[in-house]
Image (tube, rainbow, N blue to C red):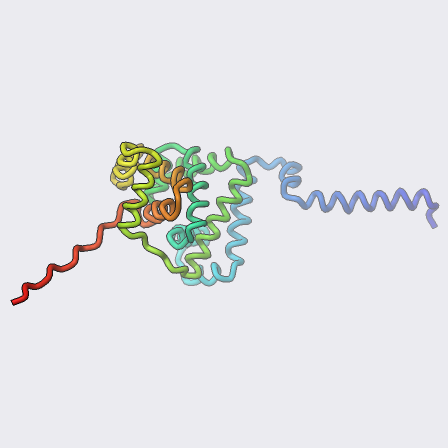
Length: 245
């Protein structure tokens, strides 16, 4: 039998080992001890996020039958589901995109706006660098936004289409906020055929200003972006009355 003092020593050692095991299981400590670079930590965060998305039953059902890798298909779900977000999620996404676009060049932002097919390896590297410059909490918020879009698409949440009248009213609120000249520049720059600089200036402005507008104007502008970034056509005029003999 061990003496009382020796038993206390072994109990303390056992408690230390148990505490160390819990501590070492934490990601941040593992990253530190294994000397993971910030880029490695970000890639690990991505991998864990994808794994979590594949475990979601609604998303897993949506992935069935899709052609391509899970990463590509999850990206498609997110892109398609953006237009299905509710107003609150739209406004939160605008704040996130405003911050992200402020960290990226006009060229890279323009490629994001025009679609994934236009993106280059340099754009992806710039996107990752932007995330690395921002706090880890921002990356979590961005991934939460992606998750909401994926769920909206997987569950086929009804998509509310913004009308011409709603956009006109929203541009009126935008003009009151930033002035007529800037509002007209936004209107002109939202054309996907505009130069990179003008296109990105318009989208950055909408992302930054929309959350500050009274509702429903901010969400209407953001839904317009999700529908392609151009003002929808007005409804056709009513038919002229027939001549009464």
